[in-house]
Image (cartoon, rainbow, N blue to C red; front, side):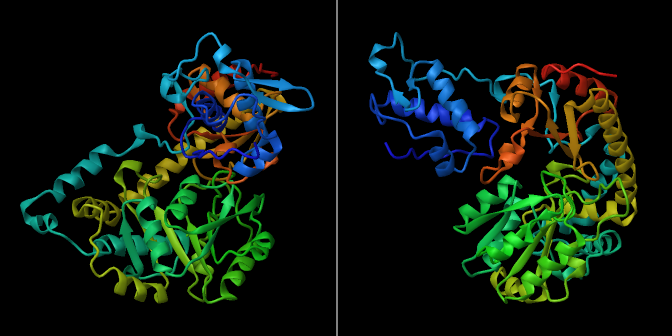
Length: 468
């Protein structure tokens, strides 16, 4: 057997090795893989599926333990005769634990926010004011780009806080990245190759794939996306998170920002999509200005959302188009209807207009900073067992565990203790051994009073003891 073709989904919570194990097991039971067939080597299968060798090793190990394959030293893995097995259940559940099967007590999901600190009373007032007979026009279909009042508030906010140069006419409002990014792909018209960060935001990879666009993964280091690697690629569009790279937390350095803009300017078809998903929360030094503010040639498409700053369920995001693409948008989307309810847009516009959005952000920065400080302090009690990075901004950080197990195994170990934490492997497009021990720790949804005990519970699950 030369190779095995399986579809593995990095966007779901089920670990990749568990998905691979289940796929091979099913193929053996269904006789798609015959008795005595030799499975591909771990290295070849890892390269073919763009996953780590550790992932393949864990999958093969589970198959070996359950008797579906046998191992011949220095030769490889071969399919057993399943007729000799005592019992084969086609619906047999995996021996590995999935998050859906566990009652999660501590959730380090990076998408969570601090719901306890939301200004419910103030928001309720503006919602109530929006649902009024005097505003009956909000029941009708509004502007395709979103309410002008809200776009004006967003433009003012972006200029003051992010250095983004734009008018309300350049802003398009929609219900999240999943809806807006395909629009951008269509606006760019030509077939493109999209450079995506590795590791990076997994959803974008699937969106580009669904839009039949090719992608190339570009490495990320402490200074953000590797622009030298980008220049050597065939990419025409670069999708970046420069102010707080997801998930590593790296900040695109000043020199690389210039290099990236130079890359975009050297070809008329080159563009940059700047995803500024959580720029509001920076805890050290001055705020990092948006890349769009440096752009002199209309090459940056700026994107952001209110999911982190307010609430994920609000489903209000937006992009800012350069003038050239705005002309194309007006021609292409003259039929379009905005996907965000006008009442929600009006509520948010008034909330921003009266200064409550800025007040809320200032309060949340203090809360998240205190949480972060408690996390760092608590980890220090365990000596050099954990190395922290990416803690300058945002609501997550990356941790590297000094442990015999790799990050995938540690995440499963945590799950057996009702703790959810994701390995960075979940966000890799192609295998990168540098991240074998790294996990992504989101702290936004952990109550401040439970930060210390939550970290202790995680360390206990890993078998670490305090040294101080």
